[in-house]
Image 1 (tube, helix red, strand yellow):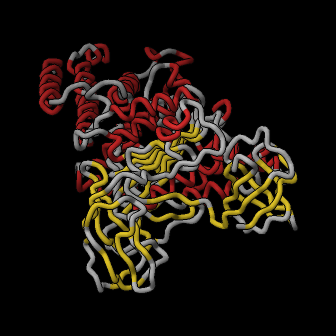
Image 2 (tube, rainbow, N blue to C red):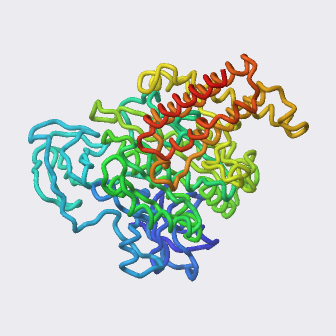
Image 3 (cartoon, one colour):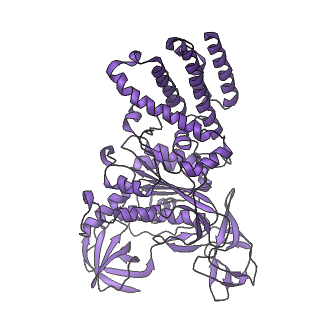
Length: 576
């Protein structure tokens, strides 16, 4: 191992001399052997970002180069785990040293003692290459973990045995002498290769009506969810993690406040997976990197998360990755960049901010992995926390350039207790046309027209509200008054959803469709009555429409909505 000495220290950025190194090598700094990574080489000086607090280290202490890039361990045991930004398991660290992490402590990402029951599916003498499945292990109840040949390896199997193994036991060997284990390592900054990228044509079903109906996200797609403090970003992301129809969830708390991350860490282990009835943690990996943890580890936590997501994608799983929030990640980059004395870009962020964001989001996608024809996907949902809710700031704008779905959270809606506080006038999804055939086939032939009709009413309401503020709603023509009433029904019964109600927390697509249809049916009956000379007061006095809200909280919503429809018809028949 190459050795050098510390020359200069500036917070998490340190400079070493007389050290032979290449970019992104992992090094050990000082007497406490703090973990760091080479981020710049300037002549005989090597600039290193350290992933731990550098207080107390001094010049002339030793720096050791491991010669390897920062990598994560990939194998059975990732699910149910809670890691910090550099894949150290937090429960293990807590056992070693209590509630406060000391410096220079190492813990392997995967449990070295646990034995896994490996069932080989390949046989001796078969040729294998990167991505081929050698066998499988039941990682958690209901999740069969495929043991893959690492992407850069190929050869003929000379030995492969089923049996009980730990992750670093040798389970087989290739003719070129390569030993195969249940786990392998992969550098976090390098995306894992795939056979083919596919177009996003299947939606990620979230059970949240405003997302599924109006601004859908495709499997393998990318979404940004920006919003000011208190607008509900974290709750929205937790809802997506709980209810989205992905097989595997990777949740990255990147620079979030400690109390918010504590909620996630204490709540997730007790959540039940709605799909299987088992604990949700059975298919979840959490990466917790709170705002008081070292700034450099915040930057790398995003890469750790996406690499774990790619590993499960390569096994043929659909993965949903939540990054909360990429603004804190960008702030970490800004801090490191200023210590490197780089030329600042807009608002002090580094000039390469857009490139780094694009590199991260580009690792999402729906693909055919190496060694199989079964598709896998990574859908990335990145929260953005613009200061003061200003969407024109650099992180939000750079994110919008690379994401195709924009879920804009609105503080004013949150203040009015409208949750999820997604602003339906500024949000958008560019996947609508690609996903339209799926919705037509799987939900209803007129799904797209129904959604478009509801959105048109909401847009008309926005125009009318300007007039209402000037002259009041009573001075509007009755047709326009009806538009306001129908828009209110859409807002309260479709867009609003209670994340903390046992039934309303998840809305299946048929339920969302039925709610939209019954409101449009009321609109149609009311317009007919207006045409026959009825007054708006009489229409608003009808009772059935007010019962639509009850259907949100009913399991047997179909029967209730059918009853409401008949009642509505009778009321309008009586009106004549």
